[in-house]
Image (cartoon, rainbow, N blue to C red):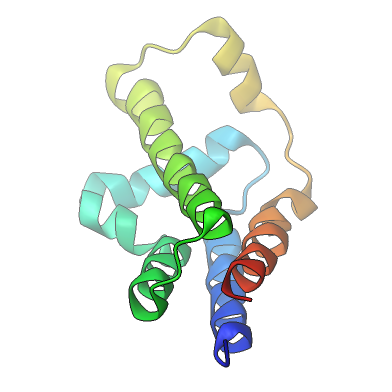
Length: 129
């Protein structure tokens, strides 16, 4: 596909944007940043996840829906809804099991936030080839 590299680069920049928006020292810090957008509007929360929309756009535009693309979509959807569920548990219901409380306090290495930029764009490129 002639646009595979272009879509991959666009997704890379979207993932770097997401990494910059969510960067924090702990998972709780990440959730606090995301909760600010969630509080304002669920639609605003979804808007700060541009990688998800880019992948959907690529699927609609190209019609490619092979196993790699399905896997990529599943990862993006799981990531998005897992964040929403954690936000609901931690900030809205305030019902957080002790194990999750400990997990939320773990220090996150700075390179962790670039995992999406290192995983999703190559997977998209592979799916489009």
